Length: 270
Image 1: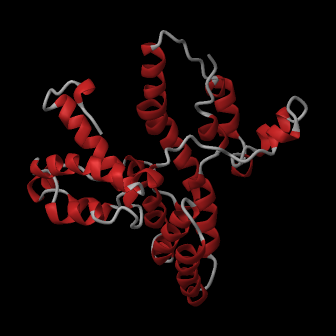
Image 2 (image 1 turned 30 degrees about the vertical axis):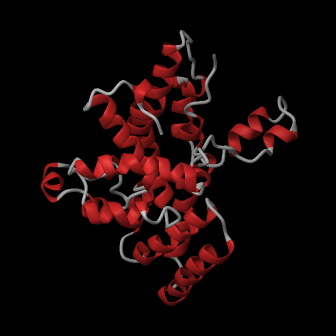
């Protein structure tokens, strides 16, 4: 089977590249106007937009506070999702926190304010693709005796796109032109559609949310997280990014039950 893995990395399809352009643009705006923009983004996000745009704009308002100080630091915040670096530090048990490296792998790649686009691509190719996307796709396909091939990760294609100007590495502009004679407009102009889980809808269902709370009682007893901070998140599933935080914590607890407590996964009930 053919896979589309690598398309976003080669052609700059991720929102991080749009945010990077946004940060460069904001950096040019006088600080006084920038401050007003920060407040307006937060207001419009909270009043008029639903997830995911609401989340993105609220995140932008957080980032705006640091753009004029350090654009690299502001950009790094995009990669801490759903927990910010500060939230991770407050959430983890104090003893455990001292033993862990909380830095995101992106830190190793971002060091030149004028070359963040290529450095981000470098991160995606060296960290995100091999350690996440390709690894998961390979495990799932092999588990079902299926061979996966990734045409977008052809060496010559990658080398070519690495050599061209950054303006052609975003939103698949060049790729769309190349295939425009082969595909109808309804495909070419179709909006990007991810395969995201409707977790905010799930957690909005009180019956379902009540069922999973028992797993957080178990998680709290592990003494890995600060109980007070953990309860704050669980008690407010509709809070900013809390649906994703709860989802991450739930999956971590289920992993603990399977691999630390040796509970057969078939016996685990959500």
